Image 1 (cartoon, one colour):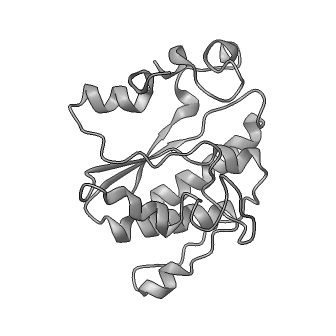
Image 2 (cartoon, one colour; image 1 turned 90 degrees about the vertical axis):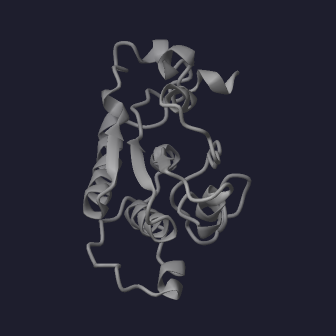
Image 3 (tube, helix red, strand yellow; image 1 turned 135 degrees about the vertical axis):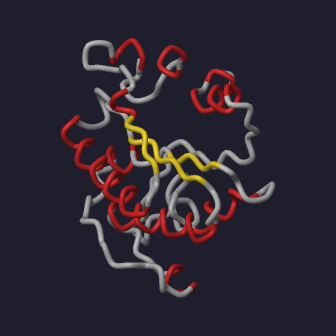
Length: 188
């Protein structure tokens, strides 16, 4: 009920940082199928969209960008895909604008390309989705997390594995009472 209870605001305060922009939305995905439009899904609403990425510079170039995306892609059975290792360093602005985002692998790659192009001096840190007991299986999460790790390693982006946060199958209900979202103790 209070932003000061979230792990990310605690992190910000513990390290003496200042929140610039919070572009997180409930229900949003990294990917977009190219046609569906709704409250949480659409051309300008997916995490890899140039619109959302452009919102991150409200107060200048961010020093650190935290990405915590993928949970809703996993839960909504977005096609996993395979990571494309083509070198994007010579892509033109129009090529970057038209990068694919329909599969999770393509969308995560596009997200990192667009972030690094827009904010070349920002440190980007990706948080891998945690396990849940209602939204998807652990095996399914592992497959999506491997794509995130592969993409991050390819682009030199640090990643933090939220699956190793101490939330286990034995205490999941204590920290994720709805099976998906952390409560105050889970955030702690």
